Length: 271
Image 1 (cartoon, rainbow, N blue to C red):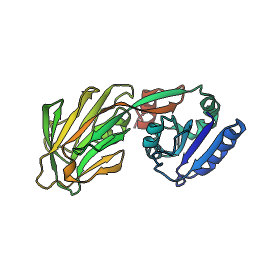
Image 2: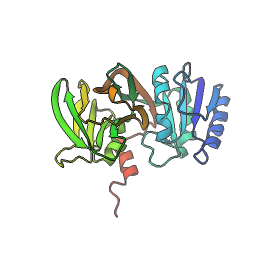
Image 3: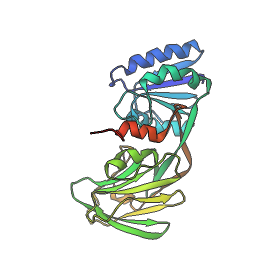
């Protein structure tokens, strides 16, 4: 790792100071280092970069996904936020840094979702795509899988989540926790009008087609929390696991997904 960019959320207390400290350690190892406090990163910002170190939280990390995927740059997150399912804890950063710089680290290859609208424009998401009404009214969405009908949902919207994103909005809406290595995606209705409408899991070879059945198509499509599409003309949408694009996340060699879930969600703790 010779050229490193620190993407820093300076609104997090101590983030810039930690980045400056780690920068000094990187310079001692002969690295060239840039610190960037403006995000999301431009799509070409990581071209030629060996490592992107994100100092903030999972939200900050999501802001570098597009640039990292384009350049195939591995990303190491350092958590100064709340939950931090994708980022290492700040207390581990200095201890892990030598192994990260030497390449003696674990890289977790994460699947992404691709959302393509009717005019061919597409977006990628590491966590999820969400379709919701701009108003507070319920929306009616028809879903087909590989050309065959699945269901018509009357709800506040639909969440389409990767395994990585299964512990985000999907979990809050009652969706399942999925191991990051599973080759699947989840679809979870948001507050469905019919209580029997629950989450569904689809394999990586499934292409979903989503139609809007509302007369007033005031819908918004977001990806990883950012607005992707707001026009009714984008429907029908196609959502699938991206065929080639992957996000390379550096994790602690001691990383265990379900140990992390235990810690972050408080499993096994007495009330």
